[in-house]
Amino acid sequence: MKFFIDTADLNEIAEAKSWGCLAGVTTNPSLYARTGGKLADFEPHMLKIAELCCGLPVSAESTATTAEGMIEEGRRLAALAPNIVVKLPVCEAGLAACRALADEGVRINMTLVFSAPQALLAANAGARYISPFVGRFDDIAEDGISQLADVVACIGNYDWTGKNVDDQVEIITASVRTPNHVTQAALLGADIATVPFGALKKCLKHPLTDAGLASFEADWKKVVEQA
Image 1 (cartoon, rainbow, N blue to C red):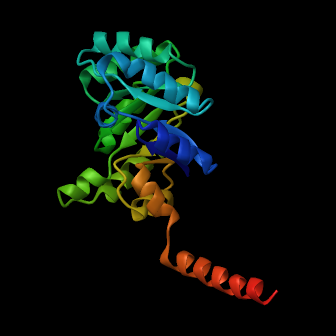
Image 2: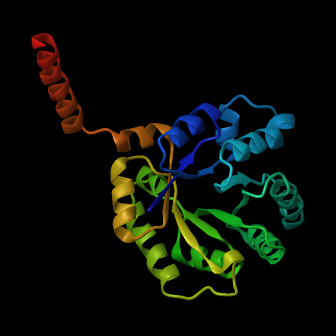
């Protein structure tokens, strides 16, 4: 399973990229707002992310509410850099825009997916990536992992050749809150997990690793002192 980082913060992206395991970036309007960015700087900021992650897919989300608006904005975003993926919500307008843009060779990440039927509609509309949410189910005391399992199984049942850009459909596990979400997504065979920086750091940490490192350092210090 590949790791994307779910952020619009350039510093977080740069640090995660330095680890050598980053495969892409996803952003959305809320994440951009947290950076303090202004409307006029949105597209330049997406370009900065795309340049920082040259060769890696970077999802930039349309904020339009009509199919026509999504298509127009999607074309503009895709033209910023070759690694930009246009992110659209799964709704009537989003599906129509997805089909139109995919037919033009634009890669689409269909987001806010909460059910297998939504995922199947997105795949048929030409989505290159489909982003089912996990954590938001947990917020309402439902099982996000079981919903993800349905999406992975349903998408995996079919050959999408000819339907999508690059003839692929990859599942991006989104709304990831914990390392266990990552583990369960990988066990199900999800292609990607897009993880906030804080949760990504938690994936790296384990108390037994910390204890082992402390023990090694203490023992080596004794060796150095005896030299």
